[in-house]
Length: 160
Image 1 (spheres, rainbow, N blue to C red):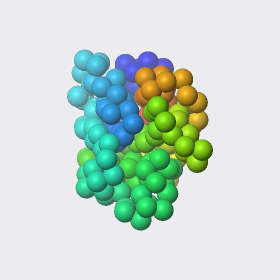
Image 2 (cartoon, rainbow, N blue to C red):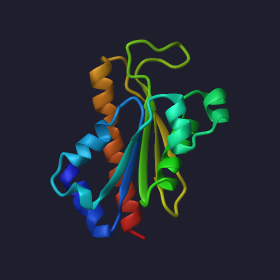
Image 3 (cartoon, helix red, strand yellow):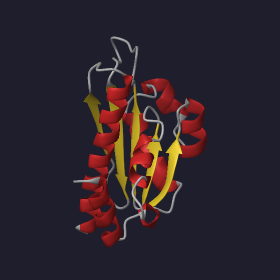
């Protein structure tokens, strides 16, 4: 599905979208808003690169950040749910990860956690290991995966 198709389906279903991004730094929102007319669907994007921004803008708990770290499904869940709570939208996606270079044995380069919050449905979280193809490649792959998650969310909300 193209980004244009995603936006058209969201508009047809009356779905508004917000993004909450860390390692992608706004790439998901940029991909969505590159399409003319996207303002009918895209409400806002949060770029919360620091832990302080995650707490202040999205309401991510200090406990989740301390216990699990910023790169975790727990924080991805709180980011997506925070975006949903802080915007008049029905759908929010979150991305937090280690684009590289670097990482550790516990949290390697290329690990990215995602959250998908759909109003009225349980929040989905998942972790994808993209490996270490380089910072730009990890960020691009994370952007594309987040867009695919949004397509799933739109389909879920459109089906009732």
